[in-house]
Length: 232
Length: 226
Image (cartoon, rainbow over all chains, first blue to last red):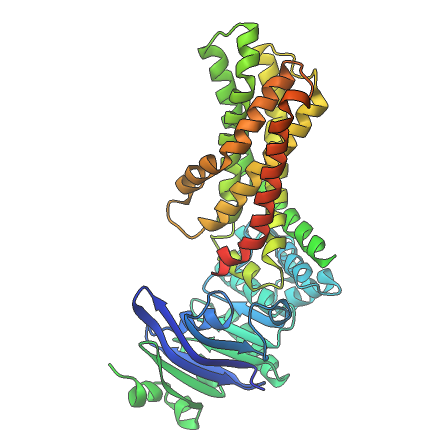
């Protein structure tokens, strides 16, 4: 069973087809890098996979189930364009809040553990609105990993991250992949993404132009997929 | 059980965030007190006229001040894309709605409970004659306002003119509940008991609350995800 499966997915904005008959699969333990130019449909596809919006046609399954099912969401982690944590709450309050929403056995303990893993334990009681950009991003990473999701959906995870946050995210993603978790990430940061990816899918104007295993050639030359499969 | 626990988590989060910033509650309190004070200076009604207009005046103030609180309900989730994290979390739309509605209800009730004594002082009205019945009507009317406002706050969260759209949509929908609450409040301040000739308005208020609460609980997931 695929960890993430999309079959014949279409999405229309008015008459414009943002996604056209997209089919994608990611097996457990795989890291799928979803690449493509701006407007290719990466975020639209990822949001449909995550259950944030519905496909016009087609079907999406996460771990064999509908993404909107509560049990599925319990096993899914999400990092979007925003940090998705509350400015008015402290780092610890934010993570404890999500720990309680995910019904973790000890939300406070889990929150403390992830604050430590992301290097934020010294500022645990500081309000997020007082944090630097890098600290906020690390907290966003901690929130996404807090409940140990089996499937991680990451929309442009490396964009605007500082060096430390990139290092933290890459380390956590490597650990997650080693533990058999599945990662699907849309990205423009080809070098960082292709270091981690086991598979690559290129979206072009809403269609899959290429999908396959990441090769050594792709890792050595991040522009290789674009050069061979992307239409101008 | 998990439903109620998650509901309380959401309500606690919203109340904590609001009490830290006090953005909505300060605006709503200031608005309601200023309007009550201005009206008391602008008009000079007699004792009977004051009682006659009490329900209308109070509920217009509560409805306008309430939308300042309700507007913020889902708008609070926008700045850091927090709504995405809530939609991604294993929490039902109904629990999310109920949590937010409870937090809003507490905030709007707080504004009303501060405004009532101000009304009593500036209009020289003995409003405590039927205080428990009055509180009961306040709770029912405020819940109706909260349910409609929270739902429309979710519906308008992604549009640019949400601050304008929420009140524009709330007041027409609230009309039956507002009319009931105004009439009941006026009669209670006049010293008449609940029941008898005003029972139909009380029933209308209860039915309004039940129907719109049920609709909101069922529809919120669709409103957020489509």
